[in-house]
Length: 118
Image (cartoon, rainbow, N blue to C red):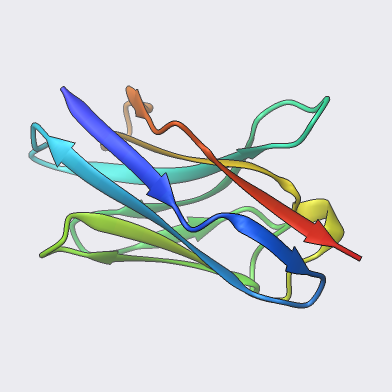
């Protein structure tokens, strides 16, 4: 079993920055990836980005490319989502997820609220 705990959400003005953290514990994967998703009120959950743990390769949704950066700390088993130039439309509950590489996400965090005010 894997436990994921997000932190770092909050209220920020448009144009500001936030950094979310996702600490993973429990079983380890031989090769895995971690993803960030978000869900705004009344909308479906959408993909934000992902990182391949081995090698650190990242992928981003077009809506956040150039503004958001995913990184990882191997020693802390933690992945980060640095969000810059935030927009009102970035307001959502952000979730991290983990799974075997290329096989979808089996484990999800509890989510952290990000609110961007105008």
